[in-house]
Length: 584
Image (cartoon, rainbow, N blue to C red; front, side, top):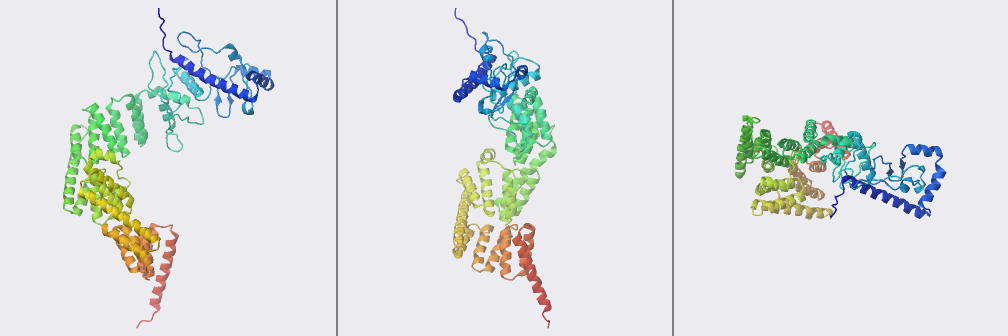
């Protein structure tokens, strides 16, 4: 008859791991004594006899001692040790091992352990895990061993779970979630502690807090409520993390997906929010709140037809005004596109701005129409603010291409490339134009923008090199070639003005600076250069006006303050001279 062998139980595995750590520590101490030239037993006995009087030995026998090594903390384990049997329980150590005296001889650190004290268990992560199990037992009011797995040896951000099993059932909670929630809000730098296997050191042990947190992390509804509270307080990142945990535990609840979409939308991650809302609708097609939220997201992203569909699916949540706003956005986008084909840039700008006001505030195509119209109307600063403002959407190329389509996103990219050129970001303009050309290589407009961006960037680079070499006439010609490909570029105009000034052609320098300021009124470098050239031409009043604007834009600039004082003195002297001059 063949005897069947059952696989080792959790307790047996825990005993195996504990024995491995204990044997490793014992081996390391034996090696240390061998290096010092003494045997472990002799060294322990000599140190114990010299350092521990009888009274201390009795006291140490009653109270487990905790000694501090240079890097590890050794702790007397209080776990009950069942006898080894056929079920795979942990075996008690031999009598000679339990009675062996242990002394702290390494590194000459003070404090010896008594002869009556049992050998220390294990150290490091295993000891920390032991402490957390004890805390868990203390909270639960049970002495049952917690089943340990090979995956939960990492205390924070662990790969496995601490499962408090009762009759084979295991909890879904993990030490990671307990540590995360205990540390995330109290991190001194505002960020949650993270990292696979990192041990977070705190002023006080966190094992009890983590284990107490485990008792209610298994309830996804509790996590959802906590996420709702974080959302109400404006902590949207924390809310997303909590909703994610609830979804991991129960992905069949549409409310979890919908609530996470709301938090993502508050963070500006609208395309991700659309995906979560669509999942909520897929789980429950009759979930009207998710339909309404999805309609609002589509409206903000400039997809009015989809918005109207979902608004109509949520009759209780939506109102007639929602459908009317979506219809208005649709009409205004169509009018703006038609006006663009006619190069009626004023109408393009008006309709695009109205669409943004009606709700399409994060629609890349609508913002691109607005920015392109501002560029054509020579309002470069405003065009730059459309894409770089605080409320401008920041979507990745891949997600935008997938969501809006290849051609639609290519148009957005070529407008962005032109805005970058106008702002003097030539390298960014070339990279963006190349991406647009990859998405839509057959589009002649995209190809033309890419060609212009490369030519302007090359002209600027060549002019800069010539200017550094003090070849001002050649540099002036190079900047002019760039302006032939990109007329009205403020950076190229200002650079050419610098060449004119070096050549003594201050009148031409003033003209180029004025042309640059016409398209970019906030271009301080061009205004400063024009003010300096007007000083050379003794145009004190014109120079004074520029310096007065500069002192508002650059209040801490000492050179501007000094130049302003000198110009004011010159102007005052000139006026006094005119008054003193005899009149005929």
